[in-house]
Image 1 (cartoon, rainbow, N blue to C red):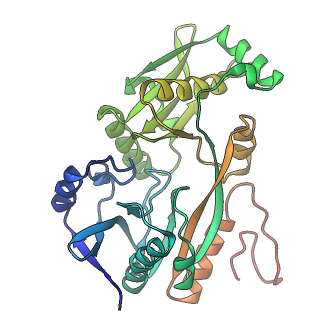
Image 2: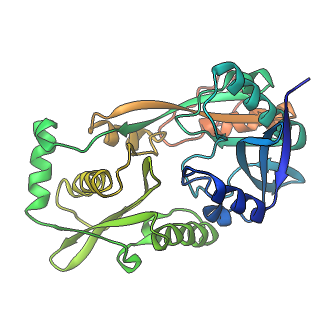
Image 3: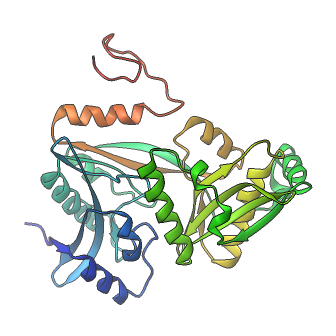
Length: 327
């Protein structure tokens, strides 16, 4: 018999619970940031009288099936958070209880875990598939003298032609270019980014060329991690402009927010990964959970992950289309 119980929490209970913690939760699971998920379930893992872990489950409904999935990509990750330091055996047991609850209650799950989340064995033991993805992370400010000569030349070239601005002026940022998708996605993801900036959890770094803003990035952060959330560029840019913005952002958050890690994120797309590889940061793996109660649903989730820009689809069975979907 398990020593842990799953308890459900209302939004107000979760907010009050968070206030009593003596540490800060990650930005992607803070109660004030969960407003982006219109429908959700908040659960805690209870051991005796103490909540020892929490998880926010965004709910998505399609074709009479209930998914645990983000309707839109508001944050790069969403994984359970352990509230205390435990040995591996106990972490495994807690993780098992969380995902056992999820897989028994919901039809599908498609969710990226944070790079610090390592407890995947218990998830796989419950019948899920955990894809291995990666991101690029640095734990220090950037010294351009340590970069390749090509990058140094690009940075010097850009700095001769642009002025870098750091502020929270949302009017400077072209959300219409930065956020792909339909109007509903653009509206909701823009609202989330503005909320993070206005609440002091994000900053905008822009490039000003001859009085016009030609590019920008949004970086969001908590007390340990910062993430490159959105970026845009318009027209012909001086070579090295986006690199300059990213380096300025990294140095700014390390200096002003005293974070421990900066995550470039978004490296699953091949062309993006090639660009991020130029920085020569540490490559960290993170798990992406795929679960479907029915085999057809499970297979469809695998095909979604195959259908990513830059990935080749191999016709192993001779009976699949270019996206790998059975025909």
